[in-house]
Length: 81
Image (cartoon, rainbow, N blue to C red; front, side, top):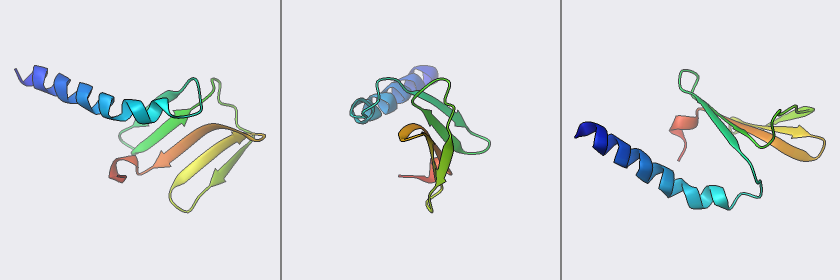
């Protein structure tokens, strides 16, 4: 029964973010999370191959190839709301 409950919680969490993800202007997205480092990687193109990285003051790195955003790295991801 506990496994079923965890699966239901997982599905509810995925459904709660689905509409927000669908609103993003990118057609494809790959998501990787490093739990040990608490870093979330969002890639909008594979391979990502960025030509520059913009580091913001809020622990977010924006990876760009010319003027196109090809990825976003979010540090301390689990503590964000």
